[in-house]
Image 1: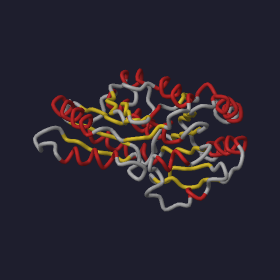
Image 2: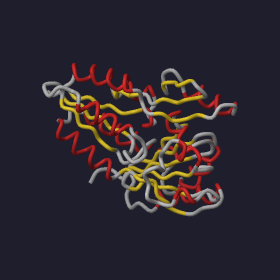
Image 3: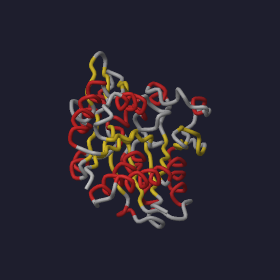
Length: 282
């Protein structure tokens, strides 16, 4: 049986416990505070990150993984596995995908076969794709079956979110390659959607209440929903309101809830909230 490995980056919003359970390798992005950079999830935990932004004296900055961490990860896994699927946040939002491709190009042809995947998403959207791929590997799927599942999961996973301001998205470079007019929406609280890897306007909303209502309506509009995940940065009370609103359609006990990882939170900023919908495979 082929030895298969799933890799992602720390924007996937997968807990360390679940990553360990599913044998997923997570490459840490970096977060810069002042003149210091930290590996997200290892040198800077989520709790420490939120304490630092609550302090407010230093503004965080998102940075991709170091090349040294990429090289070390692929050097290790190519020695132990036959097939590697490296699944990352949308290529239009960050240089991570391109950096991994460049790292892959230096891997000897005689080593493991590496497939670099653009998830077209991030945060819970990316995490959903990665978790389904890892579960397929644990269930004994072949490399071709895993690849097909990943392709379908990318197509059937959707991520919508809102932010207090778009400042963090702009600072992280997430709007640099977008063709949409998101950058002109500073004065409202828009619902934003990952559409084929690009951040686009989903709905114009001006209050948190309307934004939360829009998230629930987004879920309701799908004829079939297998899984829902809701994530927040600093406002857990928003999650309670969302779950109460969604409960008649999708029981709150079946919704995965968590605080965003530092890697995602630094891109969205305080007060952000997002929902990932997984339709299931066709």
